[in-house]
Length: 267
Image 1 (cartoon, rainbow, N blue to C red):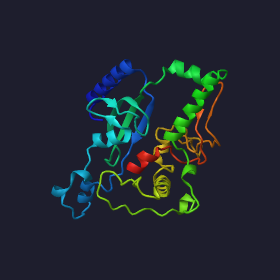
Image 2 (cartoon, rainbow, N blue to C red):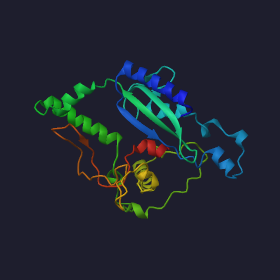
Image 3 (cartoon, one colour):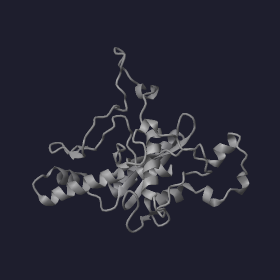
């Protein structure tokens, strides 16, 4: 994030973007695994010729982003049909480092043809019009497509369904991003389900650490609440509260962090 001055500049830029395009629609965090990054492997002692790495193994961050959300960085517009999150009108992101120095990206996205918050609230809360009912159902379908809060969509009859017994994949590829199973393979869906379930069970299950209780002022109990609000409440289906408009996503696992399957595969 840099200095205080740079953070102040980020805020000015973000406020200008909100003034121009309205409130953002999606907030995402992309936290790539850097264990197989060529530079990290070199520093770890792997015998690697840094000077002869091919461009395919070292994609630029904006090229990776462009492929995932199907956004033309140079023209500042979404390609027809959009990407994994739909058509994007604009984005704003900042890079931050974790305690161990690994970089991750926080990003706000503005969807094309999005509704004003007041109009969106009216469409969600109006339960009389059949047209608005279709809007709510389409909204639920969209959210369930881009956000997963359990592994129910990635189970099959071939592999073990118990996520605790899934063996870790030994990924040895030298690349910034992990290789995604090719859609041209006849068993692509099976490979995708295995990969997503393995990665999610390894990296998306929340375990309480000291971070969960950072800045906690409650000292009278031996079991203070997790500031990240885990465990989460379980819901059998995605629903919209008719009174408040709150969207409660389908969830069958109390400790899994929400994720997008394609971003998970890529990172």
